[in-house]
Length: 126
Image 1 (cartoon, helix red, strand yellow):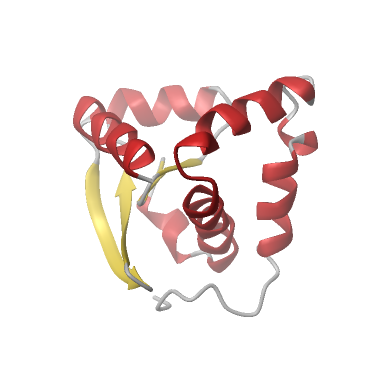
Image 2: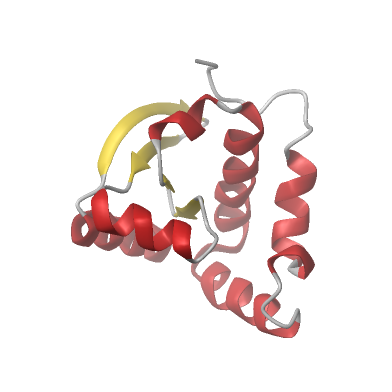
């Protein structure tokens, strides 16, 4: 997962995001980060509200982290990245392309959407 964490760090640094919360999930420190200003507006304009890169979960607003379904969805992506390691990003992009770039048809997103209704995400609740 080192490559995913490196990409997450670069995005964190380049976008000027800020860490707003964090917790331990097993042996991993998860960081909840918020994009600021232009980056948040641009991300929203593309139809996205969050993205997970390694152990960093990015959102366009801090308020999203209070939604348990959002947390469960993004933590499903953390698990996917831990399971697939450095292959996750290319596999995700390949699955997205095969799905015609439709978020709702990407199998990784379908798995994360299914996790939204889970009883517990392993994270402490705000």
